[in-house]
Image (cartoon, rainbow, N blue to C red; front, top):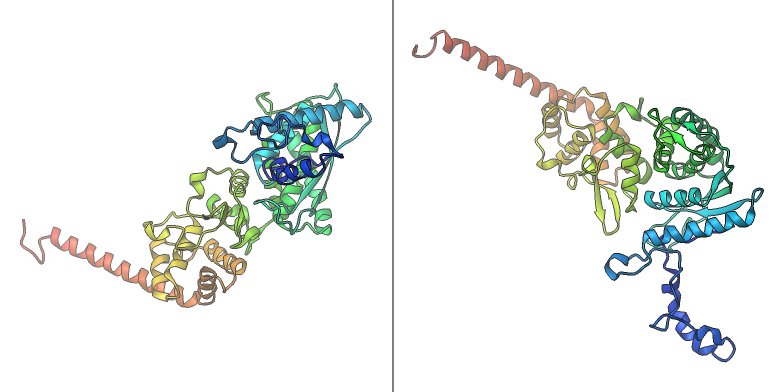
Amino acid sequence: MTDPPYSSMVEYSDSSDYFYVWLKRALASTHSELRVTANPAGVQEKFDEAVVKMAHARSGDHRTPEHYDRCITAAFSEACRVVEHAGVVTIMFGHDDPEVWQGLLAAIHAAGLILTGSWPARTEHGSQMGKANIETTLTLACRPAESDRSEGRLADVEAEIRREIAERMPLWSDAGLAALRDQRMAAYGPAMEAAGRYSAVLDHRGRPVEADHFLTLARRLVGEIADLRIGSFPLEAFDKRTQFALSWTRQYQRNPASGSEPRWERLTHDMDESDTRGLLHKVKSTYRFATATQSGIGKTELAPGLAVIDVAFAVALAGKSVSTIADVLASTDSASDELLWAVMAQLAADLGDTDADGDVWTWVTRNRTAILTGTAVIAEDERRAQRQQQDEGEQLSMGIGGTPT
């Protein structure tokens, strides 16, 4: 059993050097070996330490992500050799960075192991260790891989993963892992168990599928199986930008999330960074759901075709003014869009009326009738103006009311 270092989360030897320089002196007579170090600075040796030095790019330190991957691969390979065919290698791991997970799974595969079981737990809840607070940790049971495993087809493996996750989600909820973000991390286990049953998983063109595909699939399937609904609509009924925003607020409300969480969420919804511009606001190393002011919607020309979440931002920016909100809805032709009203009601519920935007959305949903009346008046005024302009144009073309040309 091993609980390996979580990439750059804790720099163990650097942190303990403070104690080492005192201990090697205080215990010199009883533990003389403590004084022996090849480090020219007189601190602990770090040649084989399996961590990533956070400032490695700037300092030139050898503890890079590649070094970390080599170290844990070597450790897992030795574990695989020692346990032989019938043994089990148990790994406890938790991290919020998709690249770290991909590296871990690649190391397990390169070591000749396959994942055969997984159990999620909230082992790190409440910890203040490190910038990224991991609340859910997975215990992964691995065995030496059989040499005669067959190849799998992507469609079949994806169907297996869906079945496995659907069966386990009620168990996770019963174990206190009911939150969407907890279940998404828990889903990595069954996804990789299913993929690990095969020597390789091939797509419809016969190309091998990388591990990151199954991590992203697992996250997406949790949402689909949970049947997340916004009002009476499934999450999938909304445009991707709005799906991203609703999924984020469902998990974090206005609370900060770790710096890698936007990447996970974009992978889940198959989006690029540019697709989510204006939805999140960076605060030091964390991200929060953007306010209407931070979203930049005030600099955007309002017109039909905007993402639903952007119309909702525009409404929040308008404040508690029936006429101003009616102008927004008329400009975007969205007064009768039930998806918009469902989004504003959901955001109001997620953020609450103590949040400035949530307060506006709460007020808007309560005053829908008055706002729609105002929008109808604006629409009628616009139609009247258009008819008048059209009539004047026809009169001019007939030479009436002006000098014929």
